Every structure is written in structure tokens, then in C-alpha cells.
Amino acid sequence: MNTITAGKTAKAPNTGSLKAPKKTFQIQYSSELNLVSVRGWSITDTVAERYSHLLSSIEKHLEKNGILTLHFRYETFNGTTVKYLFKILKVMNKAHAKGQKVKIYWSCLSSHESDMIDMGLDLSKMCDFDFNISYL
Image (spheres, one colour):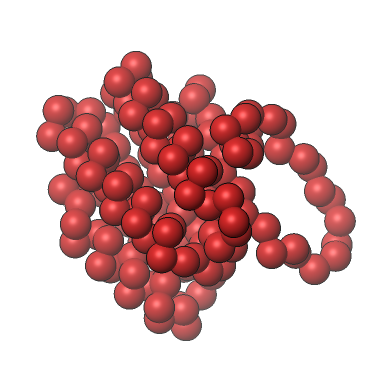
């Protein structure tokens, strides 16, 4: 899997440490698996730039391959993240309307995360394709 960082792609580091997890934000993209994984603390200063690049990558991938699965697992996010989530859903709905295979997984760390669950439910109502909400 690759990590997209400020418009550049690099191998994701293998961190086998037992230390407490850092408050990080990752976007991983695997064109071979038709998969994008977004997770962590989506509140950094570079969120807009990173989502702009992700949106462009999603559009290009769907144009070329016609299939894509997105997996979101947030610890927290900000208003900019929500803005880009709406844009991503719009692109995914258009792709679905063209007959392309698209799917979203919205994972919450527990069933007690009512804000994340509610956001997932709200987003799922905007989708014309599979939007699955789960607890880890």
C-alpha cells in the first residue's frame, strides 16, 4: 500500500512499535486493489491539499478502471474534511450512475462513537451506492 502525502506517493512505513499511536492522518491508495483508505486525525493544516489530490486521484482511477472502494476510519475530522467528503460522494454517485462499481466503508472504533456513527448515517443517505457502516 502507498501513502499519499501532499501530492506525492511513498511507501507507508512499517511501525511495529508498541508505543501509543500518534495523532496522524493517512491516505493510502492501492490502484491494484482499487482501494483508498483514509484514517486518523483529519485536522492537519494540509488536509485541503491532501483531499484535493485525493479527489483528483479518485476521478482518474474511476475513469481508467471503473471500480473503486473507499474505506474511511476517522479518529476526528474538521469542516474542511466534511467539505471534501461531500465532493467525494458527488464523484462516486456520478460514477455509480455510469455503471461503475463503487463502494464506501465507514468504520467507527466502537458503537459508542455516536458522532461518527451519525455522520456515517447522514453521508449514507446521500449515496446511490453501497455505503457500509461498521464498528471495529
